[in-house]
Image (cartoon, rainbow, N blue to C red; front, side):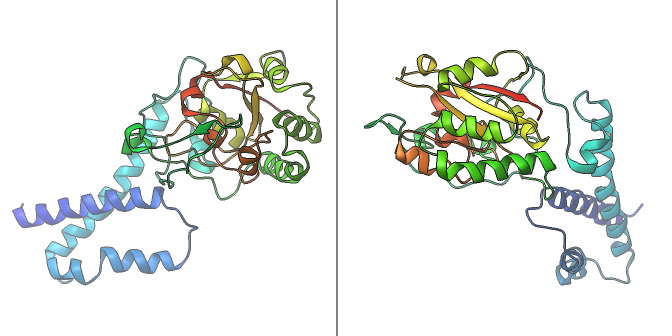
Length: 301
């Protein structure tokens, strides 16, 4: 076969592969105008300058384009088929099994979803007066591969949306204390939580709750419509405090570091409380140094 035809086919193969990759990790909704954009990109003036539309080179390019596009999809099918954590539901709506308690993500691992980097979080005052928490300073910044957040599916599980709506409704009146906020949200979902933040952490370790290994797994549980709590007892912080802290985990993006799911929370610290009503990553109420001490647990409602 002519070397030029092979080169054109290989070029098309690369473009087709990358086309599927871009479509898989898209940010926006699917629109009819996407077709025009794709045609203009893969068959526009730049391509026609390389391969005349009436020549064999353009035909080889087109074959390579299709091969690369469907080869990407075929590889995904194979990987999903041999995986213990994924099945056909992942192709339909993104559902997957939660990792087991001894199976999770490394701190430097790239999240298994669309990479959409978020801007660095500003410094903010900690839970105790006079305490300052700084995130993503240059010397502590996560490596670029880790600064990727997972996208929220366009159509959330109805229960996942219900948790978000309940948090939004309860937050204005209960934002001044993390335990009161968590108790109120749980109550509206017909789940019983009582006491201080420390007592709530003890409760979610008990019967009726499912332990979750880490933040990404907690996000997955929230996406599936489960009620998820994250918390640390007062004596378990790297620097022990007078009170613990709890937050409700919801469907949403991970923080740039890839460890903190989105959530809602209250706080006795006005600055922390003010950030708890927007569904921001819980890295805005838990320090990065304490991320491995956070207890995550879920239950159905």
